[in-house]
Image 1 (tube, rainbow, N blue to C red):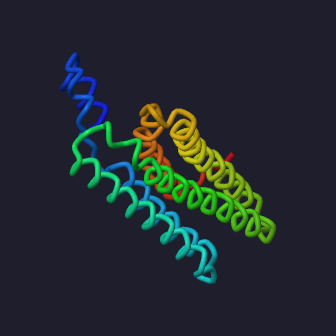
Image 2: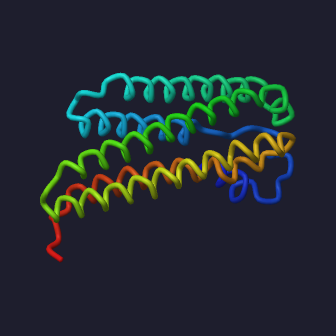
Length: 192
């Protein structure tokens, strides 16, 4: 949001401000932190037997963060939006790594929850697991869709910055999905 605020509010009508980058790493850092949270959750719901997949997810997240840092440093060092076409591979690679991590998180959490659902005999627990599976699919699909749209617009319209329309809100989607899961898992069960 800081980037959008800078361009749309602070520098409203100042066309020259579009030539200079005022970006933060907030969205990338947020995605890595939330992916780390979900990696930990994945490890916990697998009863601590799944070790390799959470490590892979974290490595993908840290690689995306590293590419994001390099991209922002290059933009700040060169100080102009005109430099962006020469380094489009950096945000594209970072988005692709983040997308891979999101897909791994969503599919593996869904698989583990469905596996546990088959082992449970209590109806209320099965219903709770069903709701958690649906929630995992909904929130995972939202972050995957947002990242995919940013990746596609970044490739199709590489001479523009339209991909930021999808990139900037992605940090909020990550945080909201994490907070909602935390709240949902701490609520007392409802008796239907």
